[in-house]
Image 1 (cartoon, protein in one colour):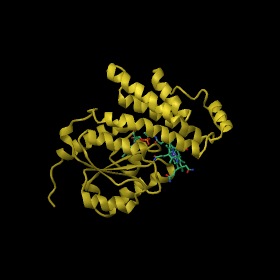
Image 2: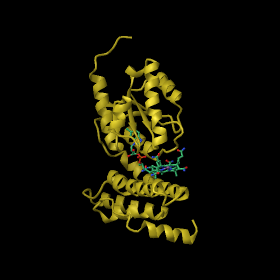
Image 3: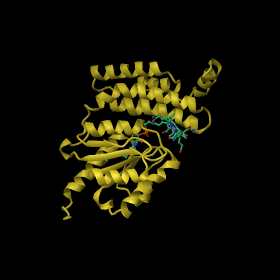
Length: 251
Ligand code: B12
């Protein structure tokens, strides 16, 4: 961005901060992302982590992630949606987000959200035509931290590849991430394909990503939804408990 463009952007960004977070440092992290300042995002994330190490009552890595970093990048996403910023800014916000996530990520593995004894196999990917993977990667980290084995198919995974991978790996849960209204339909298509191939009964299906919702989960006949990574891990653990409680079927 040129100097003028940056100034104009920052003028527009005035007043965007404060998405209901009552912590000045987390607000500063949001603002650093809104200001597209990668180094500052990393610096402030470090400070927040340091503060939590010194005082366990301070916001923990998950809160830093959700109320600081994620809230910041979503604000830039909203501005993009309103046509106030463009692709370069969106890409810069993703770089800021990644700089913060890199610092928080190793600490998420220390957060025990669920009962590790229930660990199962989770197959995950971002649906076809969709390259967004920051949220999916966070979920992968947290699933592993909670004892799940994870097979990650990456991004832009064609519908058939999900189905083939279910056949090959026989996972307990298939998770599909979709960040765009124009790609979320693939989640439903994969559920239909699993039915057609006679595999639907063998695997629980979870969906997530910004445009998805519990209503969408129900509409496409999925088993689980997660608004964020910790909710997703909790739901995955419940589903696994259901699987364990089901009587074994003879094949
Ligand atoms: C960063 C970003 C990008 C980056 C992505 C970098 C990367 N490697 O991921 C870049 C700049 C590359 C990008 C590109 C584009 N983007 Co974009 N992007 C975003 C943005 C701002 C943030 C996404 C993000 O990382 N969020 C932070 C993470 C932590 O949150 P999350 O992804 O939601 O994940 C959490 C939960 O959803 C959940 N979860 C996620 N996956 C799963 C899966 C399962 C199974 C479960 C249970 C839970 C779960 O857990 C996660 C962790 O807590 C969003 C705005 C938004 N509100 O989401 C737009 C957004 C998604 N992008 C958008 C668009 C339009 C695009 C482009 C088409 C732009 C263009 N003209 O080229 C391209 C897409 C190209 C493509 N083919 O995919 C639109 C989509 C609009 C729509 N409704 O369809 C959005 C909503 C912006 C907007 N408001 O317009 N983008």
